[in-house]
Image: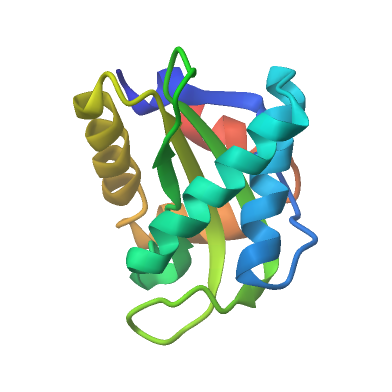
Length: 150
């Protein structure tokens, strides 16, 4: 699966309102659960699974991005939820800097190669300083969406 196949305009939020790690995770997972029509129990499961993964080591990277991710039973495809924060959030980046760009990746456990492929594609796309500047200057979800599709 290609990254572009997993990006949907309704799963992009600009700007995020949360100002801490737990809030960002909850905000992104809630957007996903709401758009996918998932139950409250499933939403809570997604949040708990992501938080468990983050306890193993932060998914924040240099360049101000984080890619929290989890394999969730019952999902039928890989999905990416994108959020942009106006203010840097302490997310545990190795360079000690704050994080502004978040890609929540949720995948079914049956196909780990798709999950890995999406994570790799996000890291590659975000290695471009120009792309990151454009993401950070995005004012709307349409701006973010168009960066990937134009």
